[in-house]
Length: 322
Image (cartoon, rainbow, N blue to C red; front, side):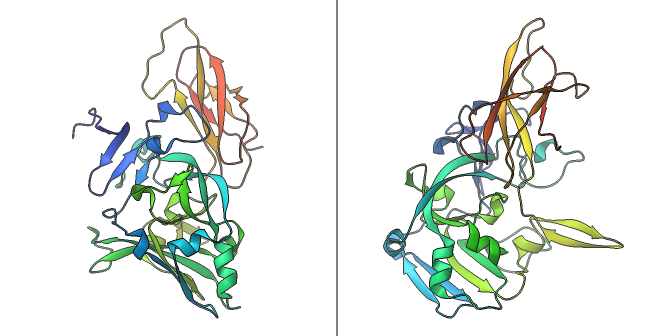
């Protein structure tokens, strides 16, 4: 596909057909909550077809009381609804120089939705976690072969782990997104939601939760979604975890021309992990000078809007660290 040709599906940019990866045009951002029809889609394998009535979620591993429950049983448990921002770890990859492999996301592999589900802590409490437990592994139904010489032979299921402390604090097993059942492309019937972490941790199409007494060493934990971290004279691969502070401009949109001697409202969004965004600055001269933006009403820690009027020119946004 030519680089300047944009293929759309339901208003989203098609980054790949198989597996399906769709990007929200970031210029369409207008509200804190991203409409489900605009929310980006990230898959590694074909989207599984799951019969809700035949689906079971298994809790096992380093627990005293392993168990399984079906969809109807899950819906009867304590639930809550929270707005959470999910961002693909590869968001903005298109702009990297030199180019790197992976889905060539621009600005729109990010979105905020209201997720309804059962706190993972409820299930962990029921299972009675053993004192030696360290991590919790999420295993999805999705599976397939990888075209990667570093991958294991045969088919692979998507799995990712988080520390036990994080699992007990704020992780959600979500079955609704923006008030409706989670759609197949977003993890129907149930997906994990890990607030403040890149979305590779929010495993979709969940089928098993495994409590372990050692660090998980799966492919998507140690080879993919991992980075080199130097410790003095040695380097080791570390899993990607928490969201980094980021601000993006929605309007003017990428490569949009602003007429000379005119003014326009610059707006976009800023987000972080567990931190609160307190200031965003905008530059229209390539970063030589910066002006503070006006933050709109913040509905939650993980996503707010910025706006400011500036003269024509290149626009950049940043979240300064004091």
